Amino acid sequence: DGSELVEIDNNISANFVKPSKKMFGKAEGKNLIVISLESLQSFVINNEVYGEEVTPFLNDFIKESFYFDEFYHQTGQGKTSDSEFLLENSLYPLNRGAVFFTHSGNKFDAMAEKLGKKGYFTSTMHANNKSFWNRDIMYEALGYDYFYSATDYDITPENSVGWGMKDIPFFEQSVDLMKTMQQPFYTKMITLTNHHPFKLDDEDKLIEEYDSKSGTLNRYFTTVRYMDEAVKHFIQKLKDEGLYENSIIVMYGDHYGISENHNEAMAQYLGKEVTPFVSAQLQRVPLIIHIPGVTNKGKGKTISKVSGQIDLKPTLLHLLGVNTKNNIQFGEDMFSSDHRDFVVFRDGSFVTRNYVYTANTCYSKETEEPVDDSYCEPFKEKARTELDYSDKIIYGDLLRFYDNEDYQKIGK
Ligand code: GP9
Ligand code: MN
Image (cartoon, rainbow, N blue to C red; front, side, top):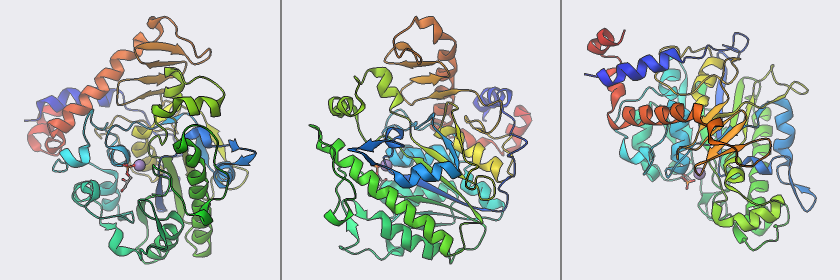
């Protein structure tokens, strides 16, 4: 009967963070283009390899955008699909397995479905097989109108590498598809070239590889550099086709690309030991939000709020003028002055304004050293409760009760 949902609902309502008055509806009626940047971690932003910028385009683009530099991925074993799940639902992915596979039959209250109801044409663009990661089934559950997949793209051996179509032709063909979309549209694009094992054709290597014992890390910089180039072409083509000025562009890294197996090489690059604290900091992924007319040249801003993928849904819906007051969600509007500096990882680690709790140890962000556990204690229960509530919702398929009359009676 959904009585389990009552407690969760009450807790979420009590913690609701009001949208920022200044930003609510700021992008109303605009297209929403969300780009999932494969395996992009924040440590490469504004960084170099042998004197060459790894992400020259993004380094410029963040100056004409809101750039969140304390934003974390929260994915688990479901990788890209977990980040998609977080984006659409503001719920946590599962502890094991991928919710895309295990719970695609659930009822959701996804961003795509909500924007659809607001008159948006909604889609995902990913030049891969439809059924990979069970996307075709899950996307139905999330309410997307259409999935532009491998069959919608002209994929050849020449324009492919590694896992599939290269990012530059992918973006190019995607803009041509966008021109045919009814506006306003919401589309989520998933890039692919910067995926492990980070292989590139020679002509696409724009910077030198790094030199360490990890070939993975060495190549990573070159594929990130290629992806950066691809985004540059994409933005230019959006401008050329007249789509740039009426679209907000959101980019985020989906999850880490360099695992802890490469700590030694990473330590060499960073010039410091990769402690559990540093590992947690390495889970930062870039989040870039460009709003035409708001963050044009000279008006960009770096925002250092501790936040994560869970916050995307309320933040973006509010920008587009959709209220989320009664939604079952764990994220908070990142533009709101009430947004709390707090992010929970799927393994129970968490980050606050001043502390990082990971590997059963409380670290001070200032000294990067362990401190007394009592500093992290006040946040432990909130972290546990959020993960626990989110799991209950998914395992119990609780959102199916939400619109139900009986539930509305108990709930409200
Ligand atoms: C492939 C994309 C990438 O379609 O999901 O895979 P992942 O990053 O999840 O391994
Ligand atoms: Mn991925």
